[in-house]
Length: 110
Length: 116
Image (cartoon, rainbow over all chains, first blue to last red; front, side, top):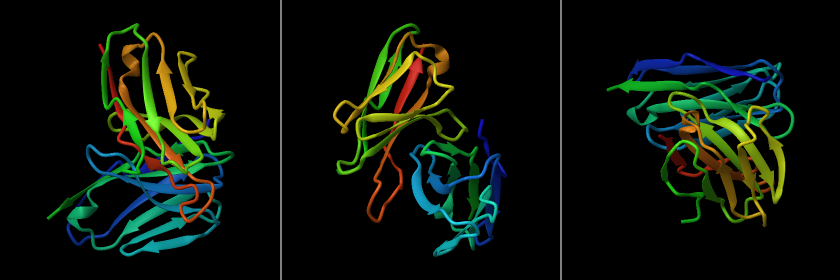
């Protein structure tokens, strides 16, 4: 079955440092979504990528979709304490069954 | 509040009992998803509806689980003969197939199930 893996599982950074999480799928994806989940909260949609090689930016966040549509990354520039949470990618290959990654838990040390 | 709502927020039950959860999606959303999430893991897909039709169901889903969306609005998820391994947060999400938020999943607060 389809698997979506994320690395790293945990990341601790000093405030102001950059952060990147990587997402890899065992199958080619039709689209990939990214979500953020704060402790005790529910996932909140960040972005959706559809095209091969697509790059999208949201302020300090940069999202990329790989050329082969099997991997993706989220990069945060100059982290802030408000960035704390777990970041999940969710990929769909055929249909609309989304497979969530294992998540990367980000801790920002002030 | 026009977000996704779920009831109850917490459910404690004894092993072997049946439980039912309800999800009320954002009113104009035609897609509705059910996920299960355990501590330290990402949401695990269970099933999804487009309007009242159940289009996909996880192959990993036991036949003790059933979901309905009879009028294409709210949905219910029933678990029969609960087991301790069913303890988890059950999340509902809804999305639209049109508009500026196309395919964006809006999650509800979840129902936390504890099976004793």
